[in-house]
Length: 508
Image 1 (cartoon, rainbow, N blue to C red):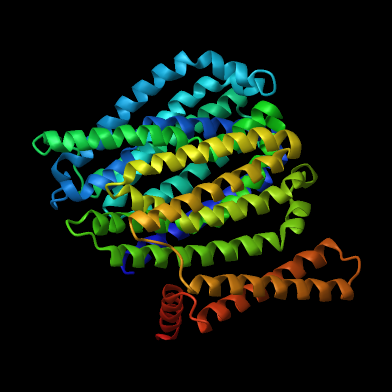
Image 2: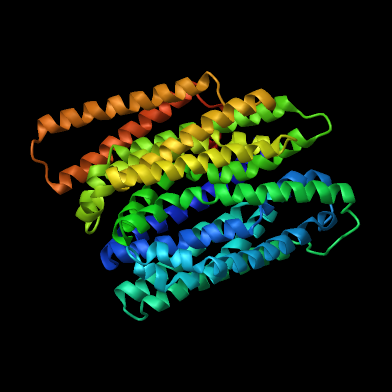
């Protein structure tokens, strides 16, 4: 896969470094020095800012990738494309501010009963949303340049380090109060956006100089229609990742939101590989489908190749998490409070695995003349999620929020994939995915056998024994998985990386 593989690997490495930092922050700093209510507050603030920034973005990320082939000419400013990526989101943010103050009363009334702490800090979501907005913009520009590693480092490493410092200043050293912690959040995202901008400028491969000559009436009409569609779609799609958190905050309180946030963070590890790989492969799918004669063979090959790799990587991560989940909550500071989210981890993990493996089909649709039809599917996703959250959370608690996410995603993806197959002709499925699932089943069976044997040897194991046993057992399962993947030829890309790694190690 060439540059796709290299940039994806670099981005994934940066992401996992960030995950390591986030792991320490979330599971040893937050759970030790913050209450579940304070954890819930920080989660809802970031979720709200992310939601607002997604709406203000006005679909710029998708429209930039869609119209990139039209502007592409090899110049630094790509005929003014990068200029428009700055202006359109700014207009969107101004429109968002108007809507925010117009509906401020409704927002406050929704949360003031169960989550009054969030109401006290709701205004801080405005600057945070602005900074997150332009982090998205600059990352999209880097994606066009097929250089996602540095923006990924900024998002996954720098941002997490900044937040970690804030948590330590607040919870461990007591240098700042809760107001100061929220200010640190805003400042961290602001510096992240600034660093992304500096990286683009210093790369000397991009220019934000305007060029209005390329904006023909036909292009303007096409762009406005597409953007109008994306604004509506963003209103639906950007709500989804945060919907359960908002429902739990409003119906159960920030304490339960904090428990859900910890479980959700564990589940996010499942789709980490998709963050870099999708960012790299999407421009190539766009070029293949936006050509005068669409190259469906190339688009379909990329789609299936990416889906197999993401299914394999996500499944392995989810299995390794689940086979050690009980030990994890026993080790976690105040883990008895957060163990209530155990099944949330599994349910959300399955949902993220399904989405990361299949959702690129929606991207394929957005690069065709049938892009507008995806709006109907996102509306179905929103309606089903709202209904399921509203029905299941009062019955099942935080697990109801997880089931609502899984159920609504399943409905959405099934309908979307059937339509994409009919209209576009691309589909993610191949017989090799059965091999991936077989590998996962064998991993679970092997783990069960080792747990059974360990239970027979030591009936009441100490914590030290459990930790050592988990390390040995996980290592054996991981090595067995690697061998099955390699000799079963499950993924050509994985096999190529293994062979290259072995060659480099044997090279004197």
